Structures are given as structure tokens and as C-alpha cells.
Length: 290
Ligand code: GLU
Image (cartoon, rainbow, N blue to C red; front, side):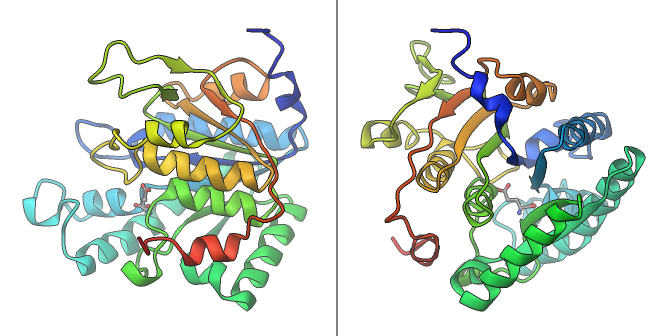
């Protein structure tokens, strides 16, 4: 493959970066990985310093809250714990996460802002309009919006459900030109590489057709986040139809962000194909309906 095929990524101006819970915490304890968070924030601030606009979609609220309240080891508060427990964990953890982000961004002389969303933020016309204006204003002011689902109030009926999808919705809403999903996998494989050693790595997806969508069906996510490859491909569908390229890359080494922004061939690139008939509101309305 031509080594310069990704050169145009250097010119991207408005970038949404999503990081998953498993990438923000130590696997052994579930506690926040401050070294990684610090490197992440430094990389984001550096991109801002290049004159680009950056939005971070960060998971980790529920995980951080669960740990802060010493609920991690308890079987009754795992993934399928009662909704009120998860929402209480999110209330504590979201504040804790933001405290850490505020501190780290301030160290690099940048300002972090918090935006919490639910499905209603997109489905309701006035809410969507207000959210759009807030994002635009924050970016104009040079702040870095940090987005999560409003897990403390979002129940099944009004939740987006996972941050892969949420980040693509944000990218579509604010007309971003690049979405980067940082995950604990290298990118898209033809099959699940954990179970099939012959699975082939896919560097670029020119068109997101049904064959590609099928590749996500067999994989599941890590034990702490909610996204597997399936949600990443849904994100790719939203992002590419809205005119944003999307890249899935492994966040084991956070400097992968720099490699991506320098046009290096890392992760899987999904090429944008703007689709004028794609309607974000209808798409979000249809989430979880089948
Ligand atoms: N919103 C959830 C949290 O912050 C995470 C959802 C996800 O990982 O996709 O804990």
C-alpha cells in the first residue's frame, strides 16, 4: 500500500476522539491509570496547539465511580447491576473523571468543558440545536469539550447506550472531519482475531457494505466498556455517512494519536462518503428499536 495514502489526515481540522473505559483504568485494580490519562491529555493539547479543534468522548464514569465507592469486587454491582447502582456510580465517577481532566488540561494551559448527552439531546429539535451551539461556542473559545452519556439519568428508553455510537453522533452533530476510536484492539479484522488465528487485518475500508458490517457481529467488547466491534461499525456508518473519516486504533500506546495525525498507516481507516439522505435525528430515534 502507498505509504502516503493517509497524508491528507494531517489536514483534518475538527477531530472527535473517543477513549474507552478499559483504556483508562488499570486492568488489575480498576483504578484510573493516571499515566495514560496524562499522556492522552498531553496529546490532545498538542493537537489543539496545532490549531485544530478537539472533542474528547470519554467513558469510564461508571467504572471510576464503582471503584471510588469500593463496589468493584461485589458480584451484585457488576455489568448487570441494578440501574440505580450504575447511575449512582456514574454520578460519583463522572465528577471524579472531570476533576482529573480539569487538572490535567489546566497543566497544559487548556480548558476542559463537560457535555453530558442522552438520546433526547439529538431527537428533540431544540435540545439538538442548543447542543450544537454549545459545542460550536466552546470550540470557538478554544475549550476542549469532554462528552459522555448522562448515565445518571439515562434509562433504556433515552439512552444511546455506548460511547462508540455516542462519539459518532457527536462527530455528525458538530460536522467533524475525523473521528478516532481508541480501543483495546488494533482495528478491524476479517474475523475475531482472539478466536481465529487466520483473521486478516483490514487497513482501509473504502465502502462500508454489508460484508464489512457482518465482520462486527461475532465480536464482543471488553469486560468494562460497552462497545465491541459491532458498535464501532455502527459508529463508522454514522461517521462516514455524515462526511467524517473514522479510524479505529489501539490505545495501548497513546502516542498512536500523533501517528494518526501525522498520516501514518495505523489502525483501520474508514473513508467518508457523505450521504445527503442520512438524517441523524431519524437514525438516533431508531436506536434500540430492533
Ligand atoms: N458511559 C459509560 C461510562 O462512562 C461508558 C459507556 C461505554 O463504555 O461505551 O461509564
